[in-house]
Length: 58
Figure 1 (cartoon, one colour):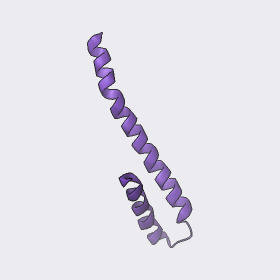
Figure 2 (cartoon, one colour):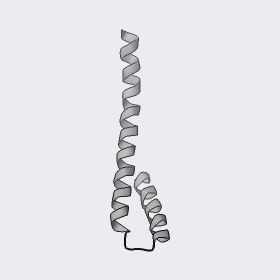
Figure 3 (cartoon, rainbow, N blue to C red):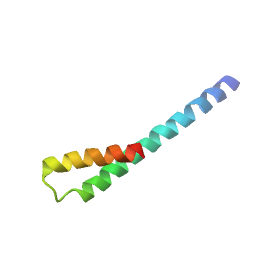
């Protein structure tokens, strides 16, 4: 029982970090998609990737 509880407590922070990172990526891509829709498609993709990278670094 104690081993199972320790195992769960070891995994919960990792799961929270993964979920938080996924939310940041999703939010960054949504903002970039809205902000850069009026540009040429090729440039738009690069701006989206760059914006997402900046959001991940913050």
